[in-house]
Amino acid sequence: MFSSKLSFIMAAVGAAVGLGNLFRFPALCVKYGSAFILVYIMLLVLVGLPLLFSEIALGRRFGGTASACFKSADKKAAPLGFLCSANAFIIMTYYCVLFCFVVLAAVFSYKLNGLTGRAAADIFGGIIFPENFSPVLLCALIFAWAAVLFCFGGADRLGKISTASVIFSSSALLLLAIFSFFKAKGQIFSFFKLNFKVLLSPSFWGDSLGQVFFSLSLMVGVLVTYGAALSIKESIIKCGSLIAFFDLAVSLAGTVIYVSVGAEGADGLLSSFSVYPKAFSAFGALAAPALCLFYLSVGFLCLDSVFSYLKSAVGFFTHRLGGGELPWAVGLAAVSALLGSFMLQGSGLAFALILDGKIVPFLVLSVGLLECALFSRLRGNRSLLNEINKNAKRGLSARFYALSVGLFAPLILAVLLISYIFL
Image 1 (cartoon, rainbow, N blue to C red):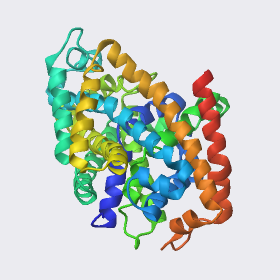
Image 2 (tube, rainbow, N blue to C red):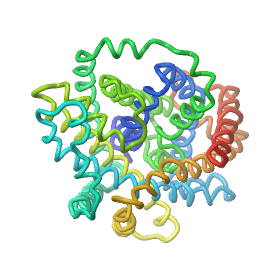
Image 3 (cartoon, helix red, strand yellow):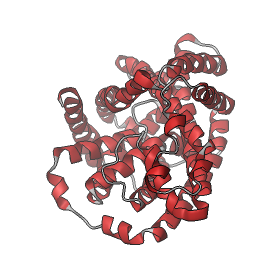
Image 4 (cartoon, one colour):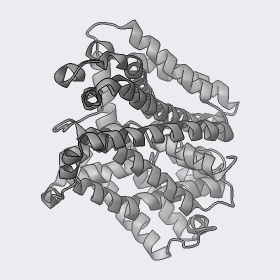
């Protein structure tokens, strides 16, 4: 069990908040303008939060790993446990590769001293993206996995580590966002002027909806696993709302930094290793320390995400095959690290980006549709909705939950799934 409500919230925030919040969300804001933020918040409330509540409630209602919870909820839903764990394993494999890039960026951030413009944007080129085999990259990946295994443990341990890392990271990012705001407040104010023409763009809605599902770490079994360790005395609605708030706050802090450099047209995870150095080069003598602090913050959030995914993946094997968590964690980490070593550069890195941009979204959305079917089935006997509303001053109405989880969410997931297949 988590030792406190704060530990649970911070563990869930650590799992949810990561590269997507600081690299992808800001890029989409730059692409579509501030209208993206308003639509994102609307979709978060209407669809994202009910699904987040449902996953936590499923875990607390049935207890155990995600695999055990799905099987207990409905024997026909047992394969969902495997699918969620498979998603977690795939994501953690390439995510830890990106984590090692962030580690290197923090270590070599001193190179930013005295540089501006294009020179600042290129400081990591030969380090993170070398043309030939790099033992430095391999050592960084080994270090990243060693850090993950060092932190791995029970819910209480993960909660305490996540609390420290999330508080440090969110505070540092807020501080950096404030500095960035005063450095380029005119540009940032200009960004927040609404442009509703983007509402006519199909890609705008696809990116907005996709970001809601992906930024909360839904459909990977993490929230179900953590929900099983949440005290019955706590309100799922309050805890889930705070998780979503932290998730959004970190995304907005990253956006302020991102917008401050006028990163027009920047897109993708890897472009952020050039955009942020350029942004912080405007800090003068504080440029290198600020960049180091930024990537340290991102690194801690990456660490939380990876060990959360590992926790979900391990849960499937301990439930189905038995044994202790640590041996399974070491084994899965070894396999993942081996696969990740082929994704460090060249065609392997290109494949990792395809995983992130195409394959994983398809898998996650597919699991999401199946989860909605399960939640709708459980809604019939109100067991899940009652669990969500426990200890809540104002719970979800049965009608709103039915519309959100039974209609809107599966419809949106189906549309997104079709777009990933055919577009």
